[in-house]
Length: 141
Image 1 (cartoon, one colour):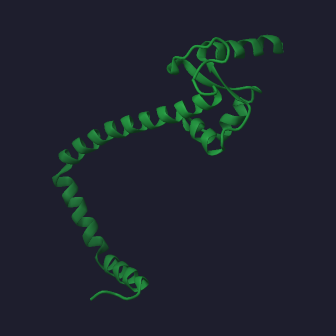
Image 2 (cartoon, rainbow, N blue to C red; image 1 turned 90 degrees about the horizontal axis):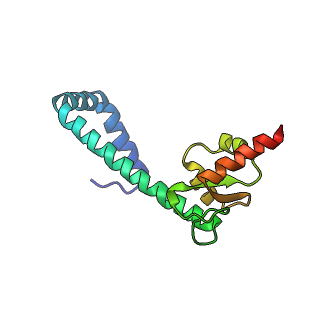
Image 3 (cartoon, rainbow, N blue to C red; image 1 turned 90 degrees about the vertical axis):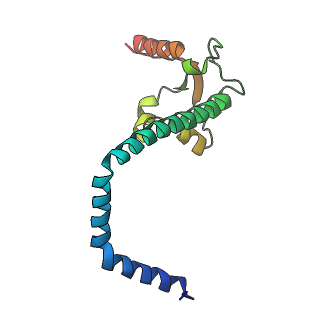
């Protein structure tokens, strides 16, 4: 009973689903309540796996960005420290506040990669990034 036209098959499947929609939802609710403990355990296990996966993915993006802006080896532009956990991206023109309004959270690395590594960024260690900010405020007065 195959359909020659894929659109006919989609339409027919949608009609079948609409006719049984409430019945299917009720079955899903019953199954969930009968197996709630199993679902909760599975959900917790999955949360841990997702966190690990996201952490690894973000670390890879950070490495790509740091290598690009450090010309190969991730290091602070001021002191040469190479500990990746201490390195941060610095806005050379001190326009980080404006940039953070556009780019949220850990998507900074993704946005730099997606926009083909724009100019105006450098790699600094956390200490030099903080020192730069302190000096900016000190001399702005």
